[in-house]
Each structure stands twice: as structure tokens, then as C-alpha cells.
Length: 248
Image (cartoon, rainbow, N blue to C red; front, top):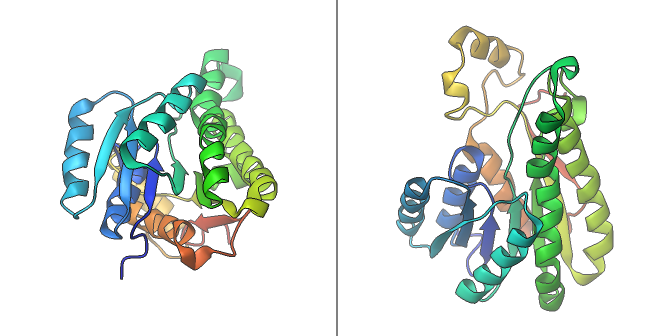
């Protein structure tokens, strides 16, 4: 059963990791997928081809989520190509880890702009379209770190906690127009980035998770399918933890 048939989804930061997983699962559920990438056109073209193999329409857009004007142009370009935007997934994110005593202003600003300001940028840019449509689902990718904090990640934790507060506020602002806004807080998700870590460290993390495994991008994608589909028509302002029980 294809839960997203006829819907157009815009996903930021989809060229790798969680974003790529969401894009593929969305395409398999019948969504037309517009996605952004920042640097590698080769990776973007490869993802386009992957998504089209599901029988989905797909197109990548080079766009910097942290830039306010770029978000508005992105929305206009997607509307010109697809005609509508039903789902927005604010996934773009970076880390610049370090203890506060060593964290530079640049480390702070870069993470806040890419992870948090980007959510404001795109949500504001797409708001008018969704208000006209009188429907829409906005899904913001936060993190368990935004809920519980983490030493050495004050900038990242602040950005991801900010996303949760933003999500709750937008849900209240736009709910009367049938526009829903929810967040997903992934835990330890195994991607190409975690593959570079020491296996002993990764195994320790797995052992501290009640389900005794790291998550996959598809685990996060399945939650995003639920929030983007009509199955969650009465769900807004919520944060779904996809963490294997890490926060239990």
C-alpha cells in the first residue's frame, strides 16, 4: 500500500544518511520527491536515479538551507516543477562538536544557522503555499540530544532543542488551516558517518540501548511516512522519539 501517492515532498539535506533514507522510502510509497543538496552534484544525480527507479518523479536542487533568500527561491523552483508542496522535511544538519571552553563563535553560529535557522527559513518560505492549499505536513528532524543534552555538543543540543520549541509553536499557529507540524528525534542512527567510528565504541552504544541495536535511516523514514501521510491527520505539535528506547 502506497501511503503517499499523489503527494509532493520537499526534503532538505537528502544526499546522504537519514535524508537519503527518507527520500528512498518516500519514493517507494508513491511520493514525488524534491530534495536539496549543498555540494556534490554527482551524489545528487545518483539519488535522483535511485528515486526514479521506484517509479517516482524526483529532482535535486542545489540550495543552502542556512540562507534565507535561498529557501524562498527553492520553494518557487519546486512549485514551478511540481505544482504543489504537500510535505516539507527539514532534515539538513551538521555538527561542530567540542567542549564549551574550546567552542568558537564560528562553531556556534554555523550549527545554529544550518540546523535551526534553516527550519525557520524553509517553513516561512513554504507557509504561504500551504495556507493557500489549506493543507500540509511539516516534519522537522530534531534529535534525542535536543531532549537530554550531551557534553561536547552544546551548539548541536541547543539547535535541536530549538527545533522542538519551534515545532510546537508552528503547530499552534497553523493548525486552524489544516497544516500540521511535528518533529522526529532520532537516537543513535547508523549511517556512513558512524561507520567510520571505532567498532568498540559503537558496540558500547548499542549495548546501552534497550533494543540492543543502532537505528537505521529507514527506521526514521518510516516515522516520517506516518507523519507525512493521512494516517496522522490528527497528530500535530508532537515529537516522536525514534531511539530504540534510549530515552526510556
